[in-house]
Length: 228
Ligand SMILES: Cc1cc2nc3c(=O)[nH]c(=O)nc-3n(C[C@H](O)[C@H](O)[C@H](O)COP(=O)(O)O)c2cc1C
Image (tube, rainbow, N blue to C red; front, side):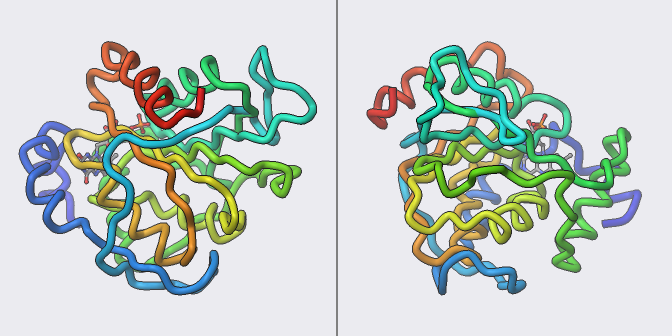
């Protein structure tokens, strides 16, 4: 995307484009377990909006108050401006879990408009940013709460890096995120394309600009999923 496009398509604009996103973001399709291959997303989407998470810890990980050495749930979140991190924090408060912040080895720009371009370019080139750190003891977790903001109707490319380096096969995966209107549900295919058999327990999308006032939806979501 060029500067002009970036200037036009801002966070607010995404709200207006939400309906389009919902229609076009049905990518994905499953192929074979988490793979590092650059796979073009195909149509498919699982779980209804609102379904499944568990307990958080940061692996580089920080345990929630109730977490124990035998905790089997992990909240893993990428958040550029902090909206999605608020959701992650709420899940971590409510569910016994460890917590891991997904970060790029090379930090993203702090400039929103510049980031729009960077993210678009990464997506166009299917570039996979390196992770600053990996999850320790990944095999110990059976439930993963995976969170991220919607970027250009897809998962941020760093999430593709994460799921190729952390095999989701055999784990219960609850996806949550924030956006300016697009649904996280429409990005599930991006993950499925890399992790063919991934089992989504559910997904939840909150409005990034109003996340603080919507956190009670997290409680409901977790309850509906039977994860708290
Ligand atoms: C690079 C980029 C791309 C975005 N693409 C979309 C999009 O496709 N649809 C949408 O509704 N919002 C989009 N947004 C808005 C973010 O999803 C929203 O602001 C989100 O709450 C940010 O979460 P964070 O604070 O955890 O980074 C985009 C924002 C950025 C920076």
